[in-house]
Image (tube, rainbow over all chains, first blue to last red; front, side):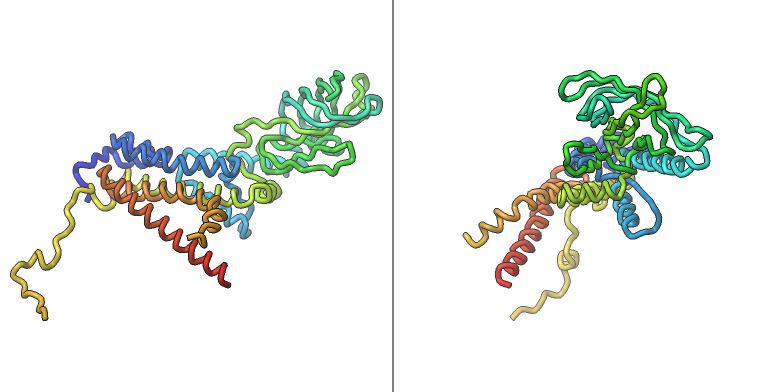
Amino acid sequence: MTDPRVQLKNPIIAGILAYLVPGLGHVYQGRYVKAAIYFVCVLGIFSWGCSLGEAKAVHLRWDGPQRQTRTRTAGFIAQAGIGIVAIPAYLQFDRYEDEITRQHSDQQGGALQETIDADFKGVFTHQQLGHGDVHGRITGQLVVGQYGFGTEFNGKFSGKTVAGQELNLTLNGSSQATSLAIGPRVTGLDDVTPKQLNGERPVPVYSGSQRKFYAQIVDAESRIEHLGSLEGSIPRAATDHFLAPLSDEAMSHLHGRLGKYYELALVYTWIAGLLNVLAIWDAIQGPAYGYGDEKPEESEAEKKPDAAPVATV
Amino acid sequence: MSFFLPLLAVEGTTVDYLVPLAAAISLVYSASRFELTERVFRRAGRLFMTIVGFMLTVLIVLWILASVL
């Protein structure tokens, strides 16, 4: 029985609010000190965990009943105690699944259509202009490929080389002819591997914030003659990588790079999610043990003053 | 006392991450038990000391075992 001094108002609404944002249900009930405790402690621990894991410790991914997938899903169930995080993560998972389906259905004619207008960073090779690092802007259109197979890109690059030379290139490529490779809109599937032209080994950079981009440079007039290639990365919108699923390679890369801090990030976010379950319960049912000013229960001896005294020697 | 100094130096970095976690757990758990602010903080303080004490005990036992064995 909840203490009558604790005003729970509508416990269902309070519970939903507490689930969405730690402490919000208590604000609704006018229990401000508790709201502050839950908000600061739960969100503080959660944010710290996210920061340790470079905002990639929270995501949902389900590939089937393999051991690794089960472990990830169990972790997400713990993190899902905080609705403001769990709901977007679930939506990102849904979008990711859609994108996977769309990619698999490429062979049947389905393909992603998209306008690309983004900053580019990478390298170029050109029959006449040579090769080197470039940065600039890519504009163009990704369309359904010929006869409905794969995707094609038609666009332009304008930018500068590291030496300051201005470049204006015409780009064209088809995913079917492997003259085009562009990372998915929602993160998780591939890596960005900047081609190193100075003899160094290619270094994969697994990052949800970047999409891989590779297209062929073609002659501006004919649009057929291949003159070289452009390879690098374009940024992915924050809404397309925040809380989105990661590929296995990206997970391994993160584990390798962050080491124990990624484990700490997982533990922090799991515990924060589970702690919020206590806050939700408190918003719905009130404090578990009472108001806090109750006197301790009387001992048996105090209850029965006429009880026989204990014999002493 | 000097026996434990390396323990603090080596393990300090990892343990540092667990102390705020223990504080948050103590506060949230205690807040879900009682309504009265003073009681919540008093109980949270006691719980925090218990958790940290337990962790330190385990740490010391493990350190001794690692040093002896």
